[in-house]
Image 1 (cartoon, helix red, strand yellow):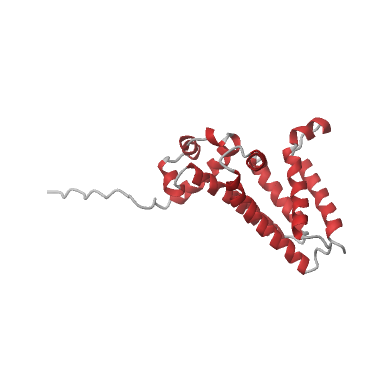
Image 2: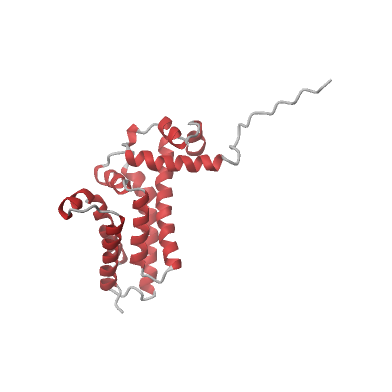
Length: 215
């Protein structure tokens, strides 16, 4: 007489090895959904369908939609910082080139990200201004200010200008073409594509270098 197989117990704990793939898929889906739709219009069902996972995994990994939104913003901010550091580690270019190159890569991947952050910060239209400040602005500003101060201490940046002023000048140049994309394209009669954005950022890097870095 054959023994009946012992039924396995349901896995009520951590998801199996593919769980991290599901978590990453949810973060990617969050990037797509939250930049394309207002926060209230994005549902957990929509996020799960975009990620092709069970909606219960949002609760497991992020507690709720707000938690996923916060993690998505923090993940985007880390991608930006990692991009700057990678560029600095692999090139001899100045920090302005590295910052602008990393920002261009990010907005090429997520074109609507600057508008999302602008809406939250200026109009407070979405989940919350403080969420963006805590998960994007503070971590990135801390990293970038530390980087600029290090260059000042090494006399690589020689202008007698406070690091926060340098950072604000740099990010203003980086962000404005993206926010004003439609207006720019109307008066310039050409699309603000990746090629033209590269030319602009190279110009900005040279202007910033000429002013803040005295050979």
